[in-house]
Image 1 (spheres, one colour):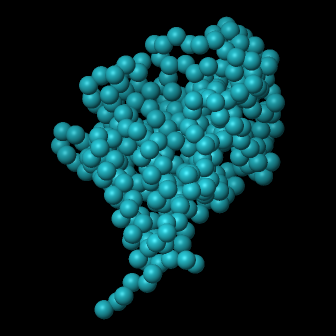
Image 2 (image 1 turned 120 degrees about the vertical axis):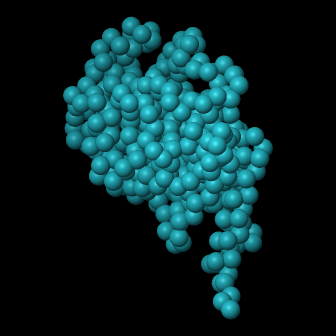
Image 3 (image 1 turned 30 degrees about the vertical axis):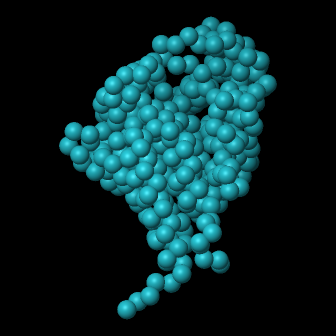
Length: 347
């Protein structure tokens, strides 16, 4: 009989705790189904699920599913912008007015001469968030504070298209998805259908955020999210992308430093204990460990992709619904995965 070593026993207890968190998230009404894909370079990958991919048939969730990644899209958009900066096609100190003359003045009442590309990417432009069907607040003075806004990244996407003469979708495919072999990752341009396999996406909200009965939103138009939140991916693709990003595989050192230089999000009514870079953010867990990556919530889907700064230990998770206390769920998963518990073997 083979007796498992202490490290293997620790790993089994960790995975059991993650599975318990997944089960409890679904049992507590946190969504139809959830997946967690954990990678640690020292150990074999682990994939866990709870709940269902389809509320009608009861089909279970499984590896390889495509899902909408929401604001994790910002990391892809930020990477493309920084690659263009490395190629001297633009600079982060260029103004919005220089690239998109009159756009923010006409549509948002702001002064594009005071808003740089860097301020778009780190959300210090002063531009408010825009939600379909809701009145947009007034802009603030650029550079004063962090205001999380989809507008910033949709403007950045427009600048990419102006600088390249191509679409953002094609630039993401050419610069990121194809080189990294991300076969399940794309920004839809016209076809809004999720590629197979995929979980059904469910929502408790309509397009303007009003609460409704749970309904299927698998095939909806998310073009409004665009460069800020319109992409689709898989857990394995997000692992490959995040690892390359964290390890410097997508950006030269100068641009890598820019991406991971953060501004405080304190007082912005956003995620607590975070600092925002250029498309990615740092999150300090209650145990003191700091993770890097991003999260995203869009109608019918909530996702999370975070790892240590070296890209050696990473967690990607998705809920095929949008009404959970996702911050609580993902924080618990992260604490279990990254905060060494008292019972773990010392090394």
